[in-house]
Image (cartoon, rainbow, N blue to C red):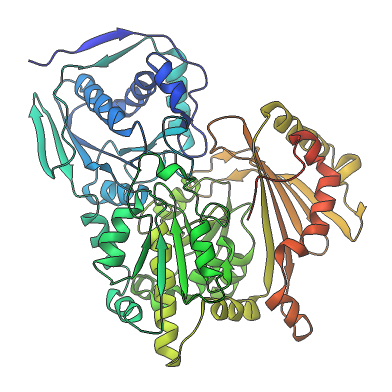
Length: 574
């Protein structure tokens, strides 16, 4: 007989979810009594209140990082102990505890799990005993919980006095697919990590067309899973199903091989070297992060910015992706810091383009209300309404579909660069760069934002008054971005500071909510140039990092960024 314990506890400070869940250092969690239990109990107090009785289910999966397997055992013990009277709980656990974030979303939606799912991930943050661990709650629609729910969970963490757990529940074996435990109206089933997600992808893409592309002798593709959750998907989908050739770092490791599982030019050096090797022959390179929801796309000698990537995908979707050929494009969207490239595609398609705060949860209501088909964030997130998360592999398959379409249409070899440059010729180009100042002093970061916010509240003040000239840039407007959800009319405030100039350029300052310690200040700079024959060479060959340097000088003059971050240069430039 399994016994249930009620354990006295006290609130633990700072258990508030960030942009997408709670992310903390492993050492903090392991060294703080009841840290995990407090947070899980707070989630269950909120979630189980929505389902008092009957048959309910929940999904558990994660990116395979250090501490996940221990955490899953604890969560199962707490689910058993917290089930309500007349309530049957079924727990669906990913095989080996590993399932990408987009796959978890797909499983929640397929099986209509009434309690949604818990995803154990810190996304693109480093893993291992010296680094980060994370957990987030996804709602029954498959998407990250909205702010109303996360606020309720946070309030529970502030007043929690006890948690329930069944510590003598037998340990669950994650390695074997099938029923794993059943007793007292409680059951656990281990599910295939890939099967349901693969079935969904086959309803979206033309796998035969992609296979044909990948079988060509004049086309080479390389995918870097960064030792994250996407490794099993690259092996079973890209390689086994589609015949992709070269895979890098496809074995899932709890510390991601000691590397930073963030798909960008800094943290994917082997892939970048392959793609920019003058003697190399790789035509398309791609990478995904620790939990598989982000992506990076690189052509031969050509990096595709995430902002351009989602714009190109949106422009091609109805031509080469069966899912969109059938459903059409209902609307497009981007997070506020993302470049305006997709806005011009929306205008061309005669659909609305929504501008949201950073965080995939803000796209959820638009998806659910049928207003949105494709969206993206500049932080290497791209996706569609097939699930309620961003989806790294979906973006890679979209690019393979575009290339397959162009190869078939032209009867000749095309390149990633030629596709993007043709896009620029049609829509013009946003020269766009992001500077990340990681793990800086939190007080300095907050002071920076507060100073600019006060200027904006004063109608621009001395710094940002309309018409103020900085070198070649004249201020047009400034604002602190807030968002009114067009579906539920909820308002989200203080989402970043935007300064626009009369030539169409802009910069954005915001604090990131994805770190586990300190603060990350992000500066986004965009200079848009419409296409003309006179501007052809600049648009096709211009270097974004060089072209935004004068804009950075202005941004630094206004924000005193180096002073407040105590950094002479950013940690990462993308």
